[in-house]
Length: 355
Image (cartoon, rainbow, N blue to C red):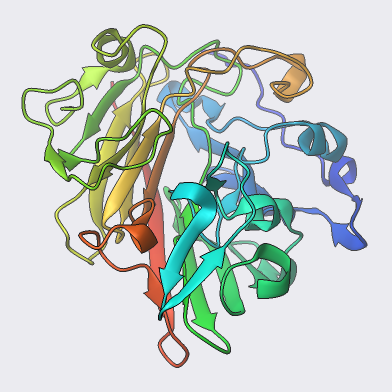
């Protein structure tokens, strides 16, 4: 049995500058195991080639063919998100008695750290080997409006031939701040050229979720998924799960896990065509599920690899993270970070093949 060749992204197509900083594409892996390509603009994962059935190889993340296309596309595609992933209501919160007002970029709200979030930054490359890439960025209060400066280090690594791991470490440099970090790759386990991911079988283990208002801001309630369309513990195809939602709405919801801070399985996805299985593991308290139902193939925003465009449910995101709007929600786990108390997190994507 033969299979179409999965071309690796060419680093020559990613060499350039952005805001005076050098941009490049960095590869990890070796033939036979996972092969990843990460751009230091946004510390973003743009290619992940994994084994499938009968020797096939599948590129399972959506992305772009070159730097120009990426800069014109969706800023969250593949990016590492900070200093505060997800939303902060009214782009405002109070910390230690002071009110902080950030720049809004999602209606009146602050999304993914605002216009100066990490998805818009060129990270410094501190180390690069065949199985490890270390990237660094420092958030400055003067740039993003959040309190204090926070140093971030992100490490992509291949601890085994079938696992891609991300680790982050953040340190408040001068005063208390708030942080919430996650990775934002869009997956399609049938391969990046597959038209959609609606046939994927998805299981999310969490027993609770966050109800939100019309602006996707949490109401403050942590509700059980039992007897709601949010209940994915038994597993459904993406199409079955979407059929339970209001027409055209899709998923952009936060699932609250067990509260454990240990690295643990949070979700499992199986693609019946390729046979690829992905287990998403994290040590964060929650997991955001985004079904990309609003993708519409419009250009240049939804241009993708190999000349294709990304339409509804072209891929999906499963993002281990803290709870959205936590600085404004006293009933949520704290998002505060203080000098002298570094915070760390880890995400693992574990792959296997199922007949």
